[in-house]
Length: 316
Image: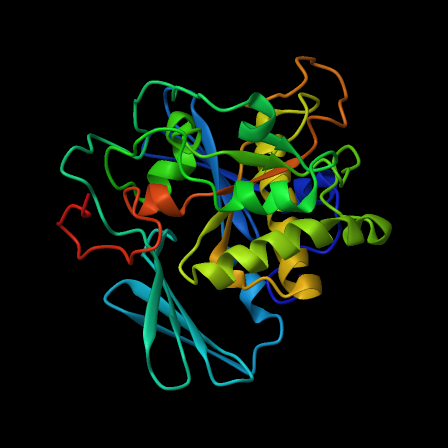
């Protein structure tokens, strides 16, 4: 362990660090820096701790726990602060950027629950109707020119956003996420069982980083979800952990090597749920990360506006 991160870059390195418990009918697999939860119905998901991404270049870090919520303040060399509030269950609640003059910008507010929301965080909506060319809806980073990469990062939803969604609803509801175009970052390739991005491939993220930085400069509240995926080799728990680490590795590299603000990125692993190549065998195509702008989903279609106060609907 170094600053809470796992040494080693293959899923096999984690096997002796993983603990399995049963809590309220759910099976919980605990690793040093994330957990995988399998519900009684068989649905499984992973939840990581992305605070490690913010330690890079920090001048100071303060953490306080009040009323069950843990508030971590990362102070940067220029005096700005990134404030992350996490609930007692480890779930991200809020992320705020405070400038050196004390002005605050809400980047993520994950406390909002829409009156239409029912039950957990899965939202049952039909797949979106896509009326744009497929190669502009799912963009191939290896083939697309830089202007297409950037245009995809600032593109509007493919259809009208009916309401505002929480970050958790977006993470765990595929048809909600699919309302936004995405970029398959197939310019980097992961080895089987590994989340390491080889140094000779890191430079290939330059075009992605340039697009992200331009989009964030245009809208400082922009939030991009980096999604991690695996092929179908291996078991479900390993693949969820592995995919989450791939997404986080890409987010870390974008910040540390290319200066993309860490607070404008969030990541989530999906294991083998969304195979691009339908095969149960090894597949480099399936070992990938995907990026999409989820700002309109967080803000109900009003991508340039701050989140409305809790309990209110966003303006139309």
